[in-house]
Each structure stands twice: as structure tokens, then as C-alpha cells.
Length: 105
Image (cartoon, rainbow, N blue to C red):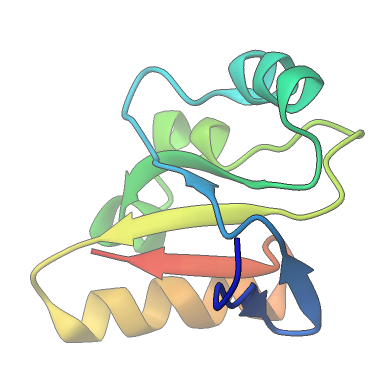
């Protein structure tokens, strides 16, 4: 397809430029592994997680922020309405090197 540009996330080029959308209760590690078997090289985003729940250390939310040992690119979507909580959640994830990419909603 001429004229198509690849998606570049940090130092990673994603071509074709396709990303699996995060879906609460669906895009867990086993589902992402299954999808990768059909479309290797794409980006598979973890489930959506609430920024405030991450900041408060909610155990269920912490379990959502898990990736399989075979996941070489860890992408996660964070959502929230309070910019302070979103910023604190992003900072914590980055400081702990838990993700390679964060999609914010």
C-alpha cells in the first residue's frame, strides 16, 4: 500500500500500523497471547485501568497491570478525570518500568 506510514512508538516501528484496542475484562494476557499468534509484530494494549485505583494501590487494579513473560512490548491504557491522579499513575508505572507505552483516555 503506497503512501502508508508506519506507526512509531518510542524506538519501535509498528508496521502495519495496527493496535489492538484495550477492552476491560477482555484484553488480558492470555487473550493478547492468542492475538499475537495471528498477528505478530502488532501492539496489543492491556486492559483499561483507572488512574486513581492505581495511585491508591487497589489490588484488583494492580493485577490488571500484568504482562506475560513473552510480551516484549508492554502497552497499557489509563483513564481518569483528575489530571493529578493520571500524572501520578503514569509516573509510578514509568518509575517501576512496568510499561513501554501508555495510552491515555
